Image 1 (cartoon, chains in turn cyan, red):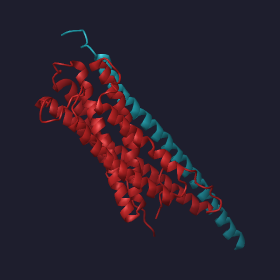
Image 2: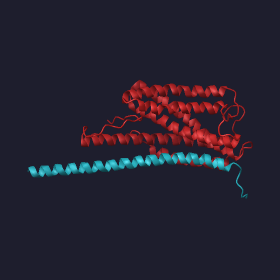
Image 3: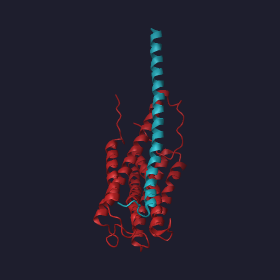
Image 4: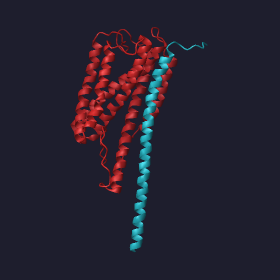
Length: 63
Length: 250
């Protein structure tokens, strides 16, 4: 088995790495967006729970 | 009780798994099954990524036009989102095709770019044409007008893509090979199998990314609708100006 790489291996590797790099950038961008959605959902959940708690307090004090 | 349904995320997992399997198989076929081409040698392996990227790019642009027609006929904003996503992803794939093509040109011809080659220059023109799509959308504030003008652009540019492709193929080829033609450089069967696998893999990747992008945009729109219903319309800050379609959550 030969230890030498075929000629132009660098160009082939570069082309496939470009493809992987573009894919990776896209995944990073979408991961950032997904994290933002998760954070905003958590904020809304807290707000919703606070609203429910204050509503329950209001009902208890009126009785 | 109102129900919500997943509009864009359906079958996304299946597409993602199929993309992973087919792309892996295609790479294995390209590197371990397809023979090394006699003329160009190992650098011809770039063909299995460059040509599928270019074909899927042009297909994405054409589908952007088809969804544009559907939007103009129906006024349904889902078609606007589909058109926008197809063109947006087409542009990203187009960048990949241009860069991998340039690397292949350097390996095969000794030059990064050949200006008197119609195939290359026409592809660059298509890329530059579609580069104006996002600024066009961003320049129009009213969402309805934005969608309508963008659809008209998508239809006109979508018609230009196949016309341009046919015109270049009819022109006399200079350097760029015609690998799928009936004469000249038709592929041998083992290369053809690797190539069609790569084409299927890249097509599946395009569909998966488009579906994921649309599902992501839809969930952000649903999140905004949820916030509006919780904190009220007046407390919600006005949505930032964007080139992306504004999705109505029903």
